[in-house]
Amino acid sequence: MLVVDILTCYAVAGIGSVVGLGLMSFIQTDQPRLLQTLNIYRWAFAALSVMSIILFAPPPQVPALTKALIGFAGMGVCLIAWAFRQLNGRRTHPYLGAGLTLVVGALLWAAALLPEAEYVRAVAVIFAVLSVAMAVDQGWLIMSSVRGHISELSLMGVALAFALHWLVVAYHAFTVPGPYPPDWLHGPVWLRPVSGIGVALLPLAVAALAFSTINARLSQQLRARALSDDLTGALSRRGLRELGERMLAIQQHQSSQIAVLMMDLDHFKAVNDRYGHLIGDDVLRHVTQVIRDRLRDDALLARYGGEEFTVLLPVKSAQEAYGVAERLRKAVETHPCETKVGPIRITISIGVSFHQASTSLEEDLAKADGRLYVAKNNGRNRVEFAEG
Ligand SMILES: Nc1nc2c(ncn2[C@@H]2O[C@H](COP(=O)(O)OP(=O)(O)OP(=O)(O)O)[C@@H](O)[C@H]2O)c(=O)[nH]1
Image (spheres, rainbow, N blue to C red):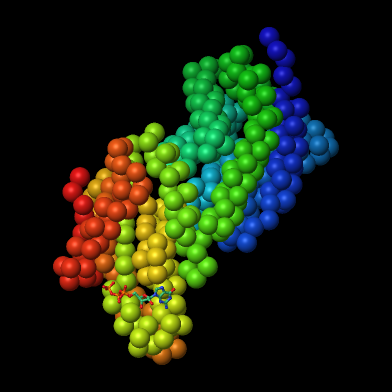
């Protein structure tokens, strides 16, 4: 049987966390949401780095310090779970994220006051609940997104392995009586080397995978910028074609479907004629922002022509697409554009089609455009859906 010195593994994990902190400091971005995610990762690796400081502080191997280390590790795991969410485009309120992190840290520190057997069980239960919640949350986020980048899937694999490990430890903490090892890791003999090596490599693995996921996101954003329209920042028609084709290809392997929304501003010529082209441009930018603010990260928004926009929307059901299209129409209607000549009210008409396995993006767009034409003819400021 492989002999693993668990304290050395903790030390390696601490060093890995310092490396993680360094990696996260190298990434530069002007994207506010990504910056926030990076900061959470930095805090996570800082909390995990405390491990190495504690372990190398004299005298080593003091149980009280080991308990404090486990408290910091719990906080690190919480922060990583929070950063995972941010990375997948789900905003978690800062107070909620920081509050949960502190609660888990406090619980682990409070558990250190319990007698040995209860302490081991409490730690096992807290980590098992935390890691299962993280794996389920991460799994759900990845499954409901159409990205599926390999590093994200690997991050999910790491989260699953981590949860499985803590479930086994929790099971043994309750079914196998003491005595407990001095390093507080309780579990079957075979688990010790597996767990030790896992603990040692975990921060490095998370850092490398998070780095590569963020890197993929950044290059995706750079690419999107190259493919976007100057006036509104939405994708250009070429961008829609490139990213849209890819979205359709990825979607083939998923349970979601893609709704195609064609939208056109109503009587926009009158706005230009009355207020001039510059104000017209402001209205186009405003409408783009109103729509973008109401779309999830996995949707694509493009300016298809002068005052015509397209959205490719991954949805679980046609019902969901109906809901989003109506929400967008209402949002534009109820949010006038504030300009220097006063508020300008504008409405949009929307035609919706659904991508089928047998249809091309061009055909989907043409079908949605046909429905848009019907929406215009039926009085404007309305949504029309294609059959099937
Ligand atoms: N300000 C501005 N106007 C644009 C831009 N691109 C196209 N347009 C204008 O958009 C207007 C489109 O007018 P029409 O196609 O007649 O449509 P509409 O007046 O919106 O009427 P319906 O679509 O039938 O409701 C034209 O006046 C174009 O000059 C742009 O980049 N900036």
